[in-house]
Image (cartoon, rainbow, N blue to C red; front, side, top):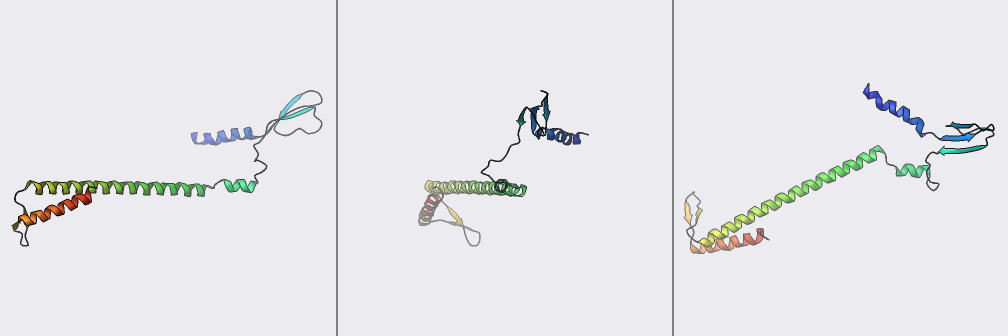
Amino acid sequence: MLRYLPLALCVLVLPAWADLYKWTDEKGNVHYSDKPPEGDVKKSESLKQPKLLPATEAPAAAAAKSKTAAELDMEFRKRHVEAAEAEAKAQKEAEAAEAKKQNCERANAQVAALGRGGRFTRPGPNGEQIFLSDEDIAKEMVNAKKAVDTWCK
């Protein structure tokens, strides 16, 4: 029953959009109608007139200005796609910034570890540990500083 309520309201509201005329006849009686008066009347006035397009706009121009549902839907979809692309781009940039931050922290940790001194090893070809010489440690320090310069800009 409630699903018919909007339809009933529309039917009741439609007559409110009609023109409303007020006139006085020869005998002095006042009449109200949705149709203009016919014949001789003493006084006539329109109480409510329909909204008309300005004279400069032709109906075709007004129709061209108004957008169809398909055009509005296409615009909505375009805005939705653009928003999704912008969100994906922002997420990708955030992930890249996080990766850069982590690489910077690793490079700084490598420089700090090499700067503390001590014995450093590297895995050999057969899985054994190879101890680095002082020259190898100096080369590793140069490489670690280059990595810091690259990642921590």
